[in-house]
Length: 210
Image (cartoon, rainbow, N blue to C red; front, side, top):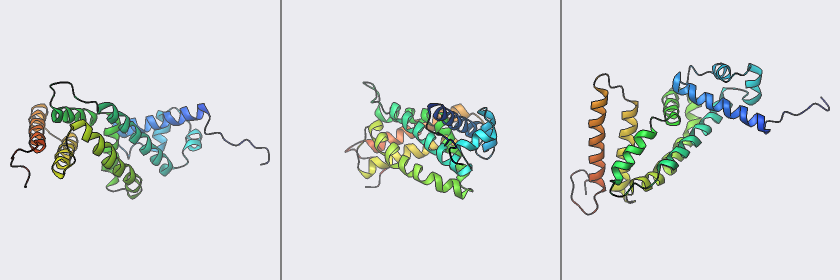
């Protein structure tokens, strides 16, 4: 209608509400899982009416796309903060593994892992995740993990980073039904040893098939 006010989604209040919705979405993905964290559940947890939710996110796809970007940015911020050089006398490989293991238990990483698991049977989610997965793989883990682990750029060193990264991610998602703490500690020690062996420049070791 002529003279009708146009919704202002860029006002400070609107931006705060939008951020609250995305923060709640991330929390519910962690606590309830992707499927149970419906738009209605997120709106209720954020203290919003259905109409207010629709004002900011008209449908599931719009919300999911925004939530992925929000979670991905949060992961990048955490990774940036963790990519500090290790202290003097601290083994770089162990430092990198300990740092990434800690990150994998932070809400943005847990939420993203939940989305990846749900995407296996959800084509829309899988499509929306693809770009964020590729960007994190090449930029966040690639370059920053390179700095974090202080290794080289040769295939052997890339393999050491991949070995550490994917073993840690798998372990973080694994279900260890007994002696979880002890078994996890032993596995982390083996991962650290394997990564150190691959990172040894100029030394013969059995892990890398030269």
